[in-house]
Image 1: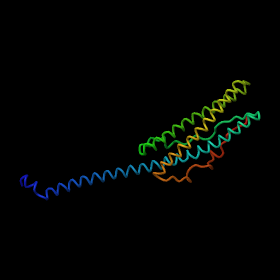
Image 2: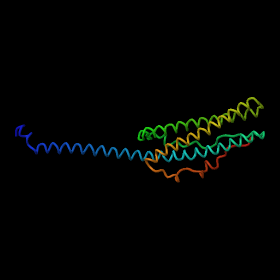
Image 3: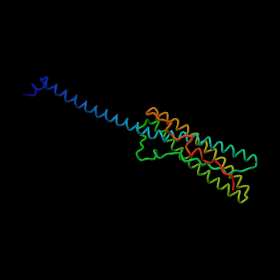
Image 4: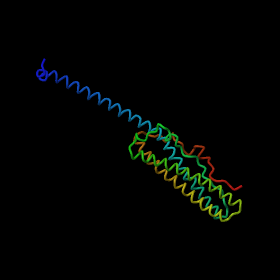
Amino acid sequence: MDLGALLNDPSFWGLIASAALAVLLASFIQWLQGKRAESRKRKQMATVLGYEIASINLLAGQSATLNQASLDAFRKALTQGTVIHLKSRDIDLPRSIYDKPWTDLALFEASLAATISELYRWMAFANKVKQDISAVSDELKDAERDGSRVDAEFGLADFLSAMEGYIACQHRIVSLSSKALTGIESITPIDRSKVLGEEHPLVSNSPQGEAPK
């Protein structure tokens, strides 16, 4: 069969059309499978990270409330001429899932990924402030023990400023974690009853202040 006859043969064009359709169908199926796999990974990532962020949200809120109450008690004691040694003793907020090498924020939309990244940056900053509080508290104890009134007054001002900053950090963390949870729960539901809450012993039994010895 010559070329002209082949090109005029309807069955030839039918074969071409069938082959092209098969290629397109195979490409579509491959694309669809890729999208489904990506969606499945996104949902799995949202689930494991969502429970960690929900824990952060609850614990940071409790931390802000407990530390504010302790700070208020500290200020009241000062007005009565009493000094109590106060430290932020709540547990560090969880971040083990975020720090895993397989955690991939690129699975989420850019705005959600940015919110989650900012949340964990604030958590790192809050931990640094908490360390500063501990250091200033120890310096304040030393100044009082040595009878240095000037150092004690400066240390007290630094301590109050650090505590206020730490509480502000916790409020910011609550805000960011709430925003992140809204985005995550648009992907998969988070059962809040399975999240660390007020009854967690590391929170409910955490002492917030101690009397000077």
